[in-house]
Image (cartoon, rainbow, N blue to C red):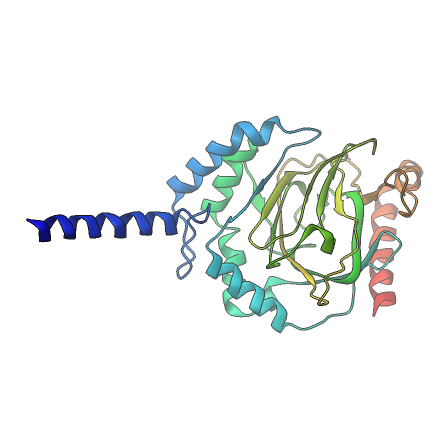
Length: 303
């Protein structure tokens, strides 16, 4: 009898330990197959919907321990194996950030990005955000692995809103951080601001396995304006994915990245007024061509 009780207790303990292990992360994405059950994805998204959609000044959420740790450990290792790359878009608003397209990443990382563009993950995002018909970006325009080195930052801004190749409207950003033992004083925190720049609403240090997701629009001001200053010189690494809908209307003028200055800071002046003036008086086709040319020139200058 005692042996039976012992075995039952041992089995119960084993089950409880397994349950704790499974519950140590939020999204049950299988580390080997990278599969996510649709019913699980939709249920988890629905559980976050009320909180996500109630946030102001725009909808956002932050989830710790988002994926199984072994997934992001491997992605971080592969990201670091890519080495240091020339910074992109160096300006007074952005410095020392480079990105790696997932198509050029090692096999496992590439598969993780595919999983985060899968039907199941899209359904998770749709249930959470209330945005139906989300479309992933197979081109990873602006997305991928982002690396910000020491003294690097990205000023407070609202994102570009139009995918020119697919003619889609940008609606949602997902950021997953890859920085173990990161502290807030190391800089690089993701910040949420009001459109008039009167208040920083929230800030999230880019700690390992933290996911920040937010809806994007013309006035969704965000960024990581505090320079990276890890004591060991470690870079700030993140996964960045953007999602779109087929709601872009004919004749609508696209928006480039709009930067705004934080009050009482040394940030570069806002470029909002200049961009608005250009969009108002320059024909759309000329505006798009000039914007693309300036983007290429900034890349050349950063090399």
